[in-house]
Length: 148
Image (cartoon, rainbow, N blue to C red; front, side, top):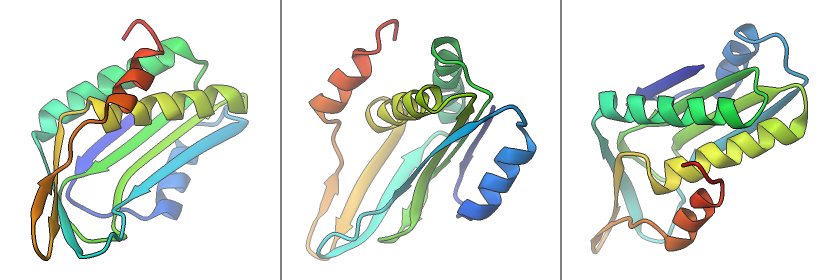
């Protein structure tokens, strides 16, 4: 398991190489790459967090994913700071012997990151600023997994 909370951008190809070097037993890999949507008039997205707290909470959710699915490895990178449209925000990579486990675990982790992880996001438009709110649908999806 490797979790990185950072202001720095990342390169997808390099991250997959690192993931593959640190896990040799997977037959399937699931990758989610989240980016800042290039919405009309969006100038930037400010993501705030307490890196140590975010690291701890994401590590806990990764442990839950390991307990629910047969996983070989998990790699999570989540950025914070001021990001521009099309910038990378988050990368979740999971590996397992079979695709269903890593795909389910990847979706579970992303549901957590989207609804419950300790990140605060503000979209800054040319004419306004808007705090991004939790969506009820994301929370419901997360709690479907049970024991969370």
